[in-house]
Image (cartoon, rainbow, N blue to C red; front, side, top):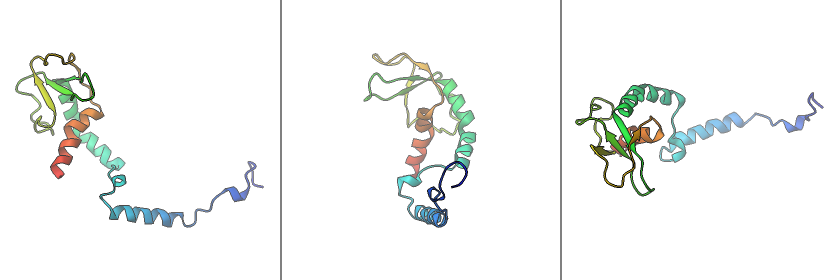
Length: 134
């Protein structure tokens, strides 16, 4: 019995696994419609972060968030300036987010500081870019 008390039969041979992985990768490449293939590589994620990091920080500084009172209501972004100072960002316009200028509507929650998170990334970048692509 090998050191550590494990029998040799407990170790699975790796032979054939490389072929399976190659086959799976080839299958994945053939089906771009499969949601399992909609992820990002680490390199793509790093590049994306580098591209939007400063834009998103500027956007968050220039906006506040109004959280919804219930799940059916949308989250709103309150622009601190009119016109918005964020026109030169990768976010070309605000047509994909619900914006508030001035005072929030009656019944809205109080505006809070906006922080860059997955909701902001999705609203400003992912959703508009994927809608553009169809």
